[in-house]
Length: 308
Image 1 (cartoon, helix red, strand yellow):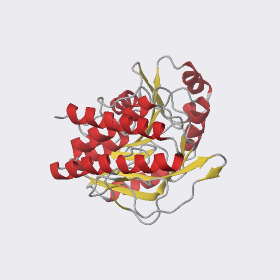
Image 2 (tube, one colour):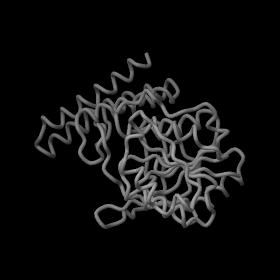
Image 3 (cartoon, one colour):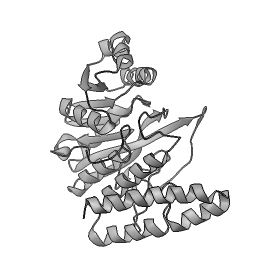
Image 4 (cartoon, helix red, strand yellow):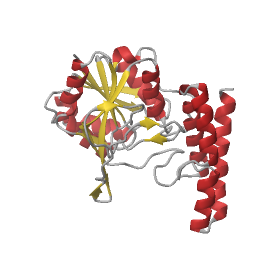
């Protein structure tokens, strides 16, 4: 079984060097590494030219002209030749047994279409070290439970995977590509959710195993989708992408239940009326709370119209 590792990158040469160094230390070497870089990203191309790792590992550079993570991932899928395509971020460092565990999972289960694992998040000099049994689920209300960075326990089936640590059987991908309808000029949030749910919807098994692990050092995002400084535009983009995915992948009754749950209740990230009202009371900043709510509901309504 041939394993390709796919790493999209943009102007993060130090992060990319750490990622490639981690791939050099794999117990089972990847058969191919595809790094996808923008043609005009001089810092990345200098890193790839100067760093020792590309001369040791089988690294191929696939260039892309179009901005955004979706375009980069689709370009990487075109360049990948492996039976399994293992995807990680440039700001992640796979642990030494990462490729070996991925190959073992896919070799043991012919029905396995996609595999995810824990990303150990490093923030401000500490590691987020909570424990959650419930990971990667779409609940009956339409609420999404992520927790991929906190998962513990054995390997189990899930509904969706996280982009920093997800692998796919080539046969399960088929003609599926990352969704170009998703908004944003940078991360195009929730593209990993859409892709993994597409594989599950096609009848393949999705599994999460916390032992398939990477260390994740979240880096700033370029473009309209900053990681820690959201704008109303990025909030609207995220809500649009999120509701486009839910409406495209859930059964009719489930998606209508989800629509009303998100409209009336929601979460801190995408608040409905309840979370908005509570947030306004707690913070005393009703204007900001309701501006966020308007951005969220605006994106949601646009997604609903797009699939009407």
